[in-house]
Figure 1 (cartoon, rainbow, N blue to C red):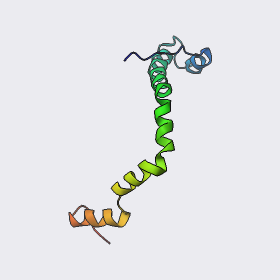
Figure 2: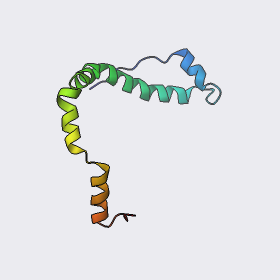
Figure 3: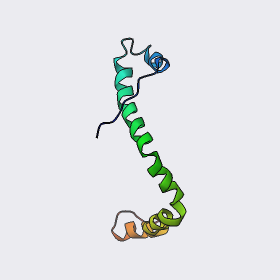
Figure 4: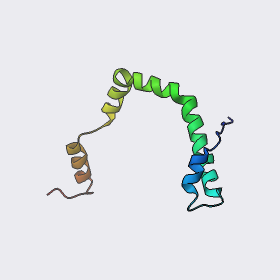
Length: 85
């Protein structure tokens, strides 16, 4: 899948100028960031759907996978990973 890139803003280039007068570092950072930005923008609807379904679908599922701190401590103690004081 081709990911579109976005042109770097001259103001962003200026931020790097003191440590990167030639602009190579700024262009490299922007190249990586612009790909992430394009993917974020392209998948924004999926993220919004995830957020909209958080309480009805995802929260309960994730909560079922989480154990209390006491349970984790007990499990670690049983396998000798930590001492209980």
